[in-house]
Length: 161
Image 1: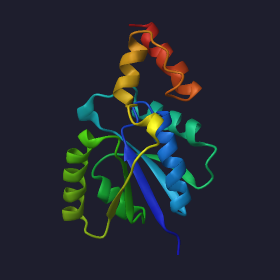
Image 2: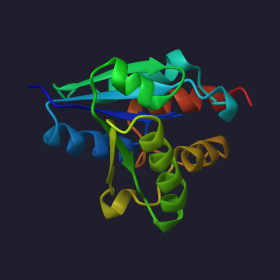
Image 3: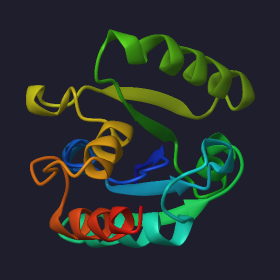
Image 4: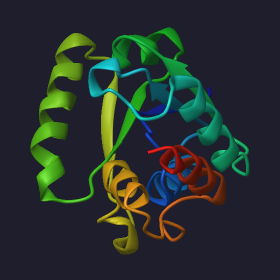
């Protein structure tokens, strides 16, 4: 039996911290779907198609990982695609309260879908997509935090601002 998991997120943009968590999840599960959420309420910088395309490019080297996009409830996507586990990253204590609420709600909505938390390696604990966007917008060097394709895309985006 194939054991699958999904790693949902806005990925605006996908960072090296996300990549590292996906790589580790791919060792734990037969298949991992990186599910890029539409998240219109967050007003993402990049379009859903751009975020999905960048994630596919960044994660292309991991055989048992696929990238998809979705709208709606994460647990509904998981159930519809036969994925019994939702993976979430915890960078710091500050993430815990929100993630705990989210996983509790997901458990209430779909008791058959489990949530597991992975903590990133130390060098990625301070990286967030919003911080990467802010540094890029101010002309800072983000090469240590994102894949070159992401860096090129953000440079292009912020050249117009």
